Amino acid sequence: MSNYLPAGSTKDPRAPWNYEDLCRNCDKDVIRDIADQEAINSDRDYDEVLESILEDTSICKECYKEEIADDDWHNWRD
Image 1 (cartoon, rainbow, N blue to C red):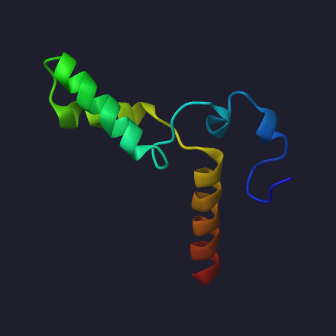
Image 2 (cartoon, rainbow, N blue to C red):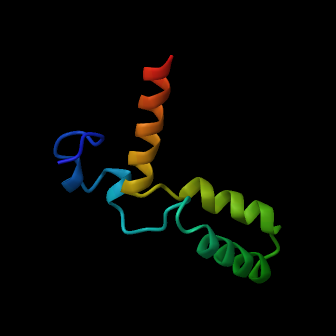
């Protein structure tokens, strides 16, 4: 059991960190390659494609834990 995730959330399919998709923090190279290919195959600009992919991409469980830990540290310190 994790101290950072809500109880039972590790098995909740609606939780964003339980998806098997790409993580916008961990998979930056893969996402950039996807955006590059999509920009080549369409009339859209690379930056526009990359931004739309990053908006639709969530974070993984480990990145979520790190964000919560960072927030806890800043709240404790203040």
